[in-house]
Amino acid sequence: MQFLVESGDVLLEGFLSTLRMLALTVLLAVPLGIVLAAMRISPVPTLRWVSAGFTELLRNTPLTLVFFLLVFVLPRLGVVVDFQISAIAALTLYTAPFYAEAIRSGINSVPSGQAEAARSLGLTFGQTASLVIIPQAIRTVVPPLINVTIALTKNTSVAGGFLVFELFASSRRLANNYADETIAIFLVVAACYLAITIPLGRLADQLEKKVAVLR
Image 1 (cartoon, one colour):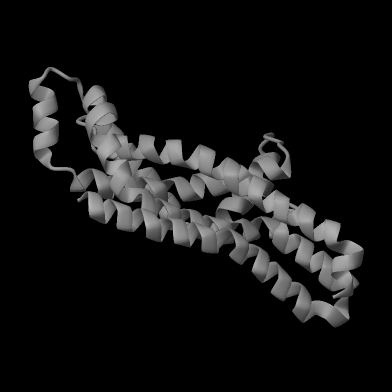
Image 2: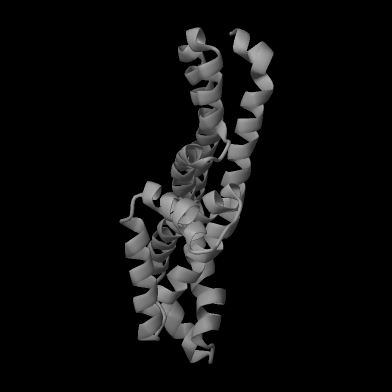
């Protein structure tokens, strides 16, 4: 594996770029998903329709198309931003609805008596959702949220096709420079992805067992 000795820094740069995109997307997509989930259970019909429409639209749109719209179409409309920012925005918009649906499933699992009790105490809808419903829902949906994050980790590779240097893009550069070691390069890159996804999967398993015990 001569490429590791001579160009290991390229692989490391791509790996760190993937981690950075993953972390920033999670930090943006999870709060957006919570907002979308809260809108779906809102007593205001307009908020429910907007949330449902946004969720269904993004969940059923190919990620590649979302990237294309943000990376190539928006600049033609005068909105010019860095490719990395566009990639994070695309991943956030695409992933947030999946987080929202996971959170909504947790909200639906909370007994309706909890909301009724909160309302009987005089709490508003916002207070009921933020202080009573969502905290209970989050505890039960942490494993599904981690599963969405695992899928997000693999989705970051799409950014490599849109002028963003990340782990998959670094593998292509190395494959061009070390054509005789292509198989080894892609095996190392696969191992890098596994270094992220396997710990996340183990964490999901542990949290699922913990939640089962709490129940």
